[in-house]
Image (tube, rainbow, N blue to C red; front, side, top):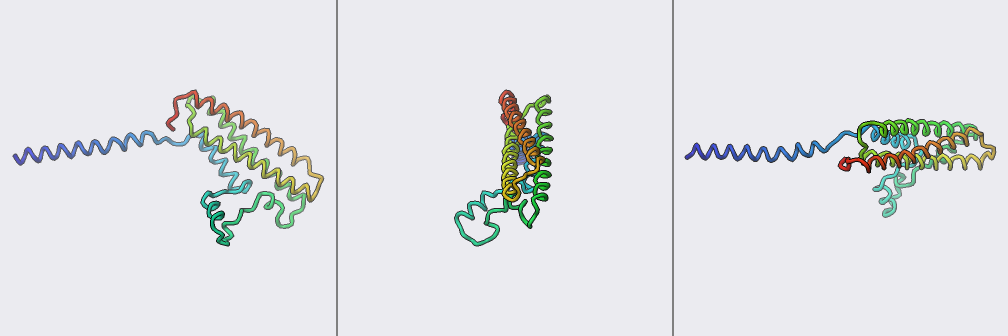
Length: 200
């Protein structure tokens, strides 16, 4: 009788072990690595933020600054791009050079991302919702960067009305690349909706 009890107990333990392992394996199967497009979009967003072309925002810090007057400098609004450009008594020429360089860097980064988007659209792998969200986030931050650059140009105009042609040319080129991104974003969304990759 004792042997029968032991055998039964071992069988129960084996059954329990099987039940606990299956959910873990099922959960793991749904975890997928970011696609090349998603990685590129996230990298561009990080590039723009780290370069200071847009202001980094923290939801918690914003809420804290609104609810509590701590007097802490960390709670104060971050320096805008226009303030950054016009700081330290830079001459209009140096400000122009800085803005042009930043605009070109932002445009090249976005151009490379758009190339990645074209590659993803023509590839065999189906696009996912994560691709859509990441690319749209990159497009939003590119537009924010353009707004920052335009604000800096306005500041320079107040100092020196004669803006070098390469500033406006660089800004127009960046705007044109953003228009390309907007069209690609529509194409990516349509491609995703036409696939069966909702679980991503």
